[in-house]
Length: 234
Image (cartoon, rainbow, N blue to C red):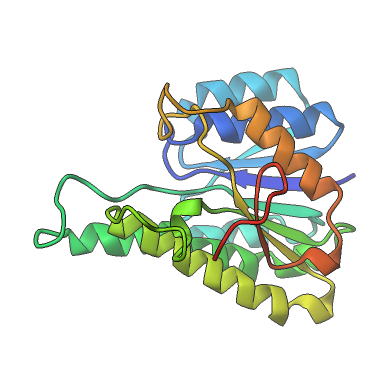
């Protein structure tokens, strides 16, 4: 059976998208490994897990790399077809330039940039044993340098731009092993982060990304694309 890892950083942050990934993949017959910081408090995810026996919930805070290593060891005999790096924090506050919170910036870079790379490192052997051999990363158009015409959000923008650059490099470094990389802009989604005025719901965003994952070929590795397949500017 195919296996998938979804993970999120905060219990309320992007929970809708994480749960939707799990719902759609479990509904298609995938074995799903869903990770969160505190499974006991993840009521939405637990409810889904009660409905689908193929969903396995694991505790993981991606900001603590020792936990990533421990989970990798626990799952050492598991093959993973697709790893989805969905964890993220916004980081920015009302404190603009001149009053930047550098500790918050560091934390944002750890979660949004370093943690996905650490996940790729820790689970590379699991992925190479899989059939799809794909690492999918939820980034943002706000990580695009050429698209930035409004400024602001320095912490979030820089962390996603760094994620894009790192995953583009990995797409080259891992290609010889048959491991592919996709970088997604999920669209403006109605989540805790996107808000009620967002343009699309999680079902549409996740459904589009799942379709692109399903049709992925190694020739597409390193692409930065919107959930509907539209190429995004770097």
